[in-house]
Length: 147
Image 1 (spheres, helix red, strand yellow):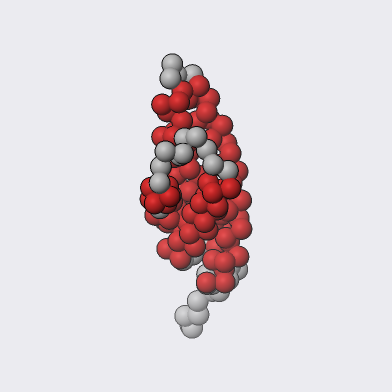
Image 2 (cartoon, rainbow, N blue to C red; image 1 turned 90 degrees about the vertical axis):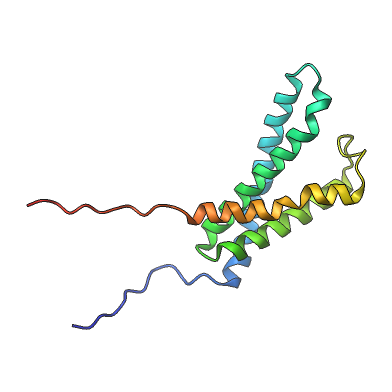
């Protein structure tokens, strides 16, 4: 008897696979950003002083969206959690910084550019966290039938 391993139907994860998964992670990031920002605005305007909560709730929505983006990118790639999450996170930071430069908001108007960058920096780590959460699925245990 030969002990040959079965080849899986999925290709081996690679750097190219991480780059191919990047648009899916960014799309998930954009969609979840819109949905979480909408939810955050509803929550903020339900409070007596909405202006006080807009910036923290907006950051929470951005950070949650980073986790979702990393999760989707890792699911699409099928491996290399750290690389996939980091690439997705760096792209998300670039997109967030570009949008904050193009569309200045009153919530971040009082912050210096360095402070704006520092508030966007956790996106990379949270995207990697999302990628690791995607890889931490539990495998189903197969029970033996009693005869």
